[in-house]
Image 1: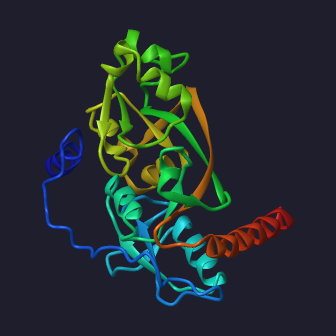
Image 2 (image 1 turned 180 degrees about the horizontal axis):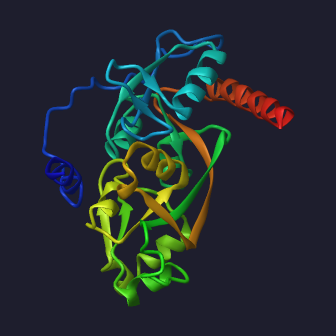
Length: 263
Protein backbone atom coordinates (compact mmCIF):
# COMPACT_ATOMS: atom_id res chain seq x y z
CA UNK A 1 0.00 0.00 0.00
CA UNK A 2 2.88 2.39 0.79
CA UNK A 3 4.24 2.30 -2.76
CA UNK A 4 0.75 2.85 -4.19
CA UNK A 5 0.19 5.90 -2.01
CA UNK A 6 3.60 7.31 -2.81
CA UNK A 7 3.17 6.79 -6.55
CA UNK A 8 -0.26 8.39 -6.58
CA UNK A 9 0.62 11.38 -4.43
CA UNK A 10 3.66 12.13 -6.56
CA UNK A 11 1.35 12.91 -9.48
CA UNK A 12 -0.61 15.58 -7.63
CA UNK A 13 0.35 19.20 -7.93
CA UNK A 14 4.01 18.43 -8.48
CA UNK A 15 5.85 19.73 -11.54
CA UNK A 16 7.81 17.14 -13.46
CA UNK A 17 11.57 17.29 -13.21
CA UNK A 18 13.34 19.03 -16.05
CA UNK A 19 14.98 16.68 -18.51
CA UNK A 20 16.50 16.75 -21.95
CA UNK A 21 14.04 16.41 -24.80
CA UNK A 22 14.46 12.88 -26.23
CA UNK A 23 12.59 13.75 -29.42
CA UNK A 24 14.10 15.37 -32.53
CA UNK A 25 12.58 18.50 -33.97
CA UNK A 26 9.55 17.95 -36.18
CA UNK A 27 9.86 18.05 -39.96
CA UNK A 28 7.14 20.19 -41.58
CA UNK A 29 7.27 18.43 -44.95
CA UNK A 30 7.76 15.03 -46.46
CA UNK A 31 5.00 13.04 -44.76
CA UNK A 32 2.32 12.59 -47.42
CA UNK A 33 2.37 12.62 -51.23
CA UNK A 34 -1.38 12.42 -51.90
CA UNK A 35 -1.51 8.62 -52.16
CA UNK A 36 0.20 7.56 -48.96
CA UNK A 37 2.79 8.44 -46.36
CA UNK A 38 6.48 8.68 -47.20
CA UNK A 39 7.40 7.81 -43.62
CA UNK A 40 5.53 6.38 -40.59
CA UNK A 41 2.91 8.68 -39.09
CA UNK A 42 3.92 9.30 -35.47
CA UNK A 43 0.90 8.78 -33.17
CA UNK A 44 1.36 9.81 -29.55
CA UNK A 45 -0.40 7.79 -26.89
CA UNK A 46 -0.72 7.93 -23.10
CA UNK A 47 0.49 4.80 -21.30
CA UNK A 48 -1.88 3.59 -18.60
CA UNK A 49 -5.08 5.17 -19.94
CA UNK A 50 -7.16 2.00 -20.12
CA UNK A 51 -9.40 1.10 -21.86
CA UNK A 52 -8.43 3.61 -24.56
CA UNK A 53 -4.64 3.74 -24.66
CA UNK A 54 -1.86 1.73 -23.08
CA UNK A 55 0.95 -0.78 -23.45
CA UNK A 56 1.55 -4.23 -21.98
CA UNK A 57 4.72 -5.36 -20.23
CA UNK A 58 6.08 -6.70 -23.52
CA UNK A 59 5.52 -3.34 -25.22
CA UNK A 60 2.39 -4.18 -27.21
CA UNK A 61 0.31 -1.01 -27.66
CA UNK A 62 -3.45 -1.51 -27.39
CA UNK A 63 -6.78 0.08 -26.48
CA UNK A 64 -9.84 1.37 -28.33
CA UNK A 65 -8.16 4.63 -29.41
CA UNK A 66 -5.06 2.71 -30.52
CA UNK A 67 -6.98 0.18 -32.60
CA UNK A 68 -9.04 2.96 -34.17
CA UNK A 69 -5.90 4.95 -34.98
CA UNK A 70 -4.22 1.91 -36.50
CA UNK A 71 -7.25 1.22 -38.69
CA UNK A 72 -7.88 4.75 -39.98
CA UNK A 73 -4.21 5.59 -40.54
CA UNK A 74 -3.62 2.40 -42.53
CA UNK A 75 -6.80 3.04 -44.52
CA UNK A 76 -5.32 6.43 -45.47
CA UNK A 77 -2.25 4.69 -46.91
CA UNK A 78 0.10 5.19 -43.98
CA UNK A 79 1.74 3.12 -41.26
CA UNK A 80 1.37 4.36 -37.68
CA UNK A 81 4.34 4.57 -35.35
CA UNK A 82 3.09 4.73 -31.75
CA UNK A 83 5.12 6.93 -29.43
CA UNK A 84 4.54 6.96 -25.66
CA UNK A 85 4.12 10.54 -24.41
CA UNK A 86 3.07 12.24 -21.20
CA UNK A 87 0.20 14.67 -20.67
CA UNK A 88 0.08 17.65 -21.08
CA UNK A 89 3.50 17.58 -22.79
CA UNK A 90 1.87 15.63 -25.63
CA UNK A 91 0.16 18.84 -26.76
CA UNK A 92 3.49 20.67 -26.98
CA UNK A 93 5.01 17.82 -28.98
CA UNK A 94 2.08 17.96 -31.40
CA UNK A 95 2.33 21.73 -31.72
CA UNK A 96 6.03 21.43 -32.59
CA UNK A 97 5.43 18.64 -35.09
CA UNK A 98 7.49 16.14 -33.10
CA UNK A 99 4.48 13.83 -33.22
CA UNK A 100 1.92 13.95 -36.01
CA UNK A 101 -1.27 12.86 -34.27
CA UNK A 102 -2.96 12.38 -30.91
CA UNK A 103 -6.08 10.25 -30.41
CA UNK A 104 -8.72 10.76 -27.72
CA UNK A 105 -8.88 14.56 -28.02
CA UNK A 106 -11.60 17.16 -27.52
CA UNK A 107 -11.84 20.29 -29.65
CA UNK A 108 -10.94 23.71 -28.32
CA UNK A 109 -10.27 27.01 -30.09
CA UNK A 110 -6.83 27.19 -28.45
CA UNK A 111 -5.84 23.75 -29.74
CA UNK A 112 -7.11 24.65 -33.21
CA UNK A 113 -4.34 27.25 -33.51
CA UNK A 114 -1.78 24.46 -33.90
CA UNK A 115 -3.87 21.35 -34.68
CA UNK A 116 -6.33 20.08 -37.24
CA UNK A 117 -9.12 17.73 -36.15
CA UNK A 118 -10.66 14.61 -37.62
CA UNK A 119 -14.33 13.73 -37.67
CA UNK A 120 -15.61 12.33 -34.33
CA UNK A 121 -15.05 8.61 -33.74
CA UNK A 122 -16.57 8.21 -30.23
CA UNK A 123 -18.16 10.28 -27.47
CA UNK A 124 -16.93 11.05 -23.97
CA UNK A 125 -18.95 10.99 -20.77
CA UNK A 126 -17.72 12.05 -17.34
CA UNK A 127 -19.29 11.15 -14.01
CA UNK A 128 -18.44 11.79 -10.37
CA UNK A 129 -16.95 8.77 -8.56
CA UNK A 130 -16.64 8.31 -4.79
CA UNK A 131 -15.64 5.50 -2.44
CA UNK A 132 -18.04 2.64 -1.94
CA UNK A 133 -20.63 3.48 0.71
CA UNK A 134 -19.94 7.23 0.66
CA UNK A 135 -22.51 8.36 -1.88
CA UNK A 136 -24.96 9.11 0.93
CA UNK A 137 -22.29 10.88 2.98
CA UNK A 138 -22.10 13.58 0.31
CA UNK A 139 -25.66 14.52 -0.72
CA UNK A 140 -24.52 16.60 -3.69
CA UNK A 141 -27.20 17.75 -6.09
CA UNK A 142 -24.70 19.24 -8.55
CA UNK A 143 -21.04 20.18 -8.78
CA UNK A 144 -21.90 23.58 -7.31
CA UNK A 145 -22.29 21.87 -3.91
CA UNK A 146 -18.59 20.94 -3.89
CA UNK A 147 -17.60 24.28 -2.34
CA UNK A 148 -20.20 24.56 0.46
CA UNK A 149 -19.79 20.87 1.41
CA UNK A 150 -15.98 21.04 1.48
CA UNK A 151 -15.84 18.07 -0.84
CA UNK A 152 -12.30 17.46 -2.11
CA UNK A 153 -12.64 17.01 -5.88
CA UNK A 154 -9.89 15.71 -8.17
CA UNK A 155 -9.67 17.04 -11.72
CA UNK A 156 -6.95 16.56 -14.29
CA UNK A 157 -4.98 19.65 -15.16
CA UNK A 158 -5.30 20.69 -18.81
CA UNK A 159 -8.27 18.34 -19.36
CA UNK A 160 -11.38 19.77 -21.01
CA UNK A 161 -14.51 19.06 -18.93
CA UNK A 162 -16.85 21.45 -20.69
CA UNK A 163 -18.25 24.92 -19.94
CA UNK A 164 -19.94 24.04 -16.63
CA UNK A 165 -16.69 23.00 -14.96
CA UNK A 166 -14.78 25.88 -16.58
CA UNK A 167 -17.28 28.36 -15.09
CA UNK A 168 -17.14 26.72 -11.65
CA UNK A 169 -13.35 26.94 -11.63
CA UNK A 170 -13.68 30.73 -11.58
CA UNK A 171 -15.50 30.56 -8.21
CA UNK A 172 -13.09 30.78 -5.23
CA UNK A 173 -15.14 28.46 -2.96
CA UNK A 174 -15.20 25.77 -5.64
CA UNK A 175 -11.58 26.19 -6.72
CA UNK A 176 -10.33 25.80 -3.14
CA UNK A 177 -11.80 22.29 -3.03
CA UNK A 178 -10.18 21.14 -6.27
CA UNK A 179 -7.02 19.03 -6.38
CA UNK A 180 -5.40 19.18 -9.83
CA UNK A 181 -3.69 16.00 -11.04
CA UNK A 182 -1.02 16.00 -13.72
CA UNK A 183 -0.84 13.25 -16.32
CA UNK A 184 -3.41 10.52 -16.83
CA UNK A 185 -6.30 9.93 -14.47
CA UNK A 186 -5.46 8.50 -11.03
CA UNK A 187 -8.68 6.98 -9.62
CA UNK A 188 -6.72 5.43 -6.76
CA UNK A 189 -6.55 8.87 -5.12
CA UNK A 190 -10.20 8.35 -4.17
CA UNK A 191 -9.64 4.78 -2.99
CA UNK A 192 -6.89 5.80 -0.54
CA UNK A 193 -8.83 8.83 0.75
CA UNK A 194 -6.59 11.53 -0.69
CA UNK A 195 -9.67 13.10 -2.27
CA UNK A 196 -13.41 12.56 -1.76
CA UNK A 197 -14.33 12.26 -5.42
CA UNK A 198 -12.99 12.37 -8.95
CA UNK A 199 -14.61 13.50 -12.18
CA UNK A 200 -13.70 10.54 -14.40
CA UNK A 201 -14.38 9.31 -17.89
CA UNK A 202 -16.87 6.47 -17.37
CA UNK A 203 -14.80 4.00 -19.42
CA UNK A 204 -11.69 4.83 -17.39
CA UNK A 205 -13.57 4.28 -14.13
CA UNK A 206 -14.90 0.90 -15.28
CA UNK A 207 -11.42 -0.24 -16.32
CA UNK A 208 -10.01 0.86 -12.94
CA UNK A 209 -12.69 -1.02 -10.99
CA UNK A 210 -11.97 -4.15 -12.99
CA UNK A 211 -8.27 -3.96 -12.08
CA UNK A 212 -8.49 -3.53 -8.27
CA UNK A 213 -9.89 -5.42 -5.31
CA UNK A 214 -13.49 -4.83 -4.22
CA UNK A 215 -12.43 -2.66 -1.27
CA UNK A 216 -10.67 -0.24 -3.63
CA UNK A 217 -13.50 0.10 -6.14
CA UNK A 218 -15.38 3.34 -6.75
CA UNK A 219 -19.08 3.99 -7.22
CA UNK A 220 -20.77 6.51 -9.44
CA UNK A 221 -22.45 9.39 -7.61
CA UNK A 222 -25.92 9.96 -9.08
CA UNK A 223 -25.74 13.76 -8.97
CA UNK A 224 -23.16 14.48 -11.66
CA UNK A 225 -22.94 13.30 -15.27
CA UNK A 226 -21.37 15.35 -18.06
CA UNK A 227 -21.73 14.56 -21.76
CA UNK A 228 -18.40 15.95 -22.94
CA UNK A 229 -19.26 15.55 -26.61
CA UNK A 230 -17.28 14.07 -29.49
CA UNK A 231 -13.78 12.63 -29.30
CA UNK A 232 -11.47 13.20 -32.28
CA UNK A 233 -7.94 12.81 -33.56
CA UNK A 234 -5.70 15.87 -33.42
CA UNK A 235 -3.13 16.34 -36.19
CA UNK A 236 -0.16 18.69 -36.21
CA UNK A 237 -0.59 21.61 -38.60
CA UNK A 238 3.18 21.51 -39.20
CA UNK A 239 3.30 17.99 -40.62
CA UNK A 240 -0.15 16.71 -41.65
CA UNK A 241 -1.94 18.06 -44.75
CA UNK A 242 -5.71 18.27 -45.01
CA UNK A 243 -5.73 15.67 -47.78
CA UNK A 244 -4.52 13.00 -45.37
CA UNK A 245 -7.14 14.00 -42.81
CA UNK A 246 -9.83 13.78 -45.49
CA UNK A 247 -8.89 10.15 -46.11
CA UNK A 248 -8.92 9.46 -42.37
CA UNK A 249 -12.40 10.96 -42.18
CA UNK A 250 -13.61 8.72 -45.00
CA UNK A 251 -12.57 5.69 -42.99
CA UNK A 252 -14.17 7.04 -39.79
CA UNK A 253 -17.41 7.59 -41.70
CA UNK A 254 -17.28 4.03 -43.08
CA UNK A 255 -16.69 2.63 -39.59
CA UNK A 256 -19.67 4.57 -38.26
CA UNK A 257 -21.98 3.29 -41.00
CA UNK A 258 -20.83 -0.28 -40.31
CA UNK A 259 -21.43 0.13 -36.55
CA UNK A 260 -24.93 1.46 -37.17
CA UNK A 261 -25.70 -1.47 -39.46
CA UNK A 262 -24.61 -3.94 -36.75
CA UNK A 263 -26.85 -2.26 -34.19
